[in-house]
Image (cartoon, rainbow, N blue to C red; front, side, top):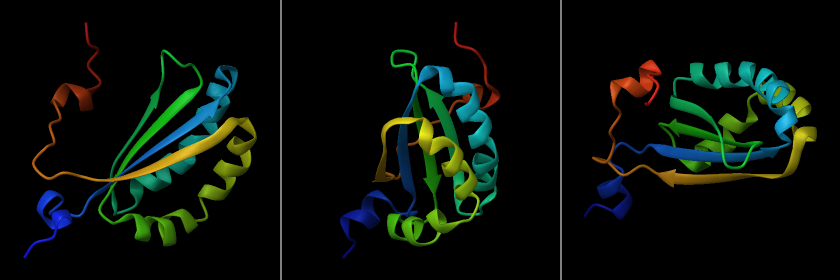
Length: 125
């Protein structure tokens, strides 16, 4: 008999939501420091989506949306140990105004929609 995880997440994808809180004035420096880490993560074969958002209603709040082909245990034991996180964290952690929040979710199979306009960066009017 299939487990609930197998029924709802047949492809075993994990979504990681990371919320980082910085001063709005640090945003340009934060993004500059994060880019090499984002690029390295995006090149990992297990990373299939990595999007970065900034809150318009809460300036300085950054949301990272990552989708990985592995589970949380793998992410904690293998991905977070990669050396390219070190320079990023060394520069950005002092910018944090409160601890970052990391939340893991199992993706529900059959509930994904992406309009091509999203990936093309078409502005909504």
